Figure 1 (cartoon, one colour):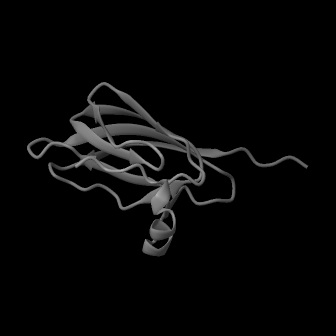
Figure 2 (spheres, rainbow, N blue to C red):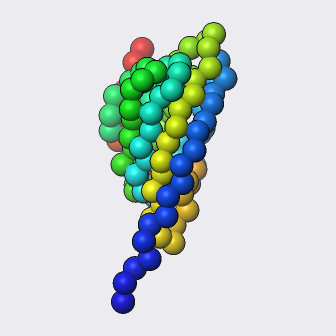
Length: 114
């Protein structure tokens, strides 16, 4: 018996100046992206928070890893990106993470910059 192939979704997104982006979440499969304009604050579980700038690529491994933040880093310009998301068969593409799970996994989050 063979498993169905993963599905994928591609598209773009835009964040207005000062946007906090989406709440903490995870993807069932990997996400590959490219920042078209602006700057993005990017925080994945177990990694230091970083700023991605226009022209740079980013990726998220998918699975159990929490994506804490993808927020606009600039207060005076919007941020736009394109992304390809690969979905694990039979699973949701994106799942939001609740407060209880965030608290349970707090030890896995890299300390935020002061």
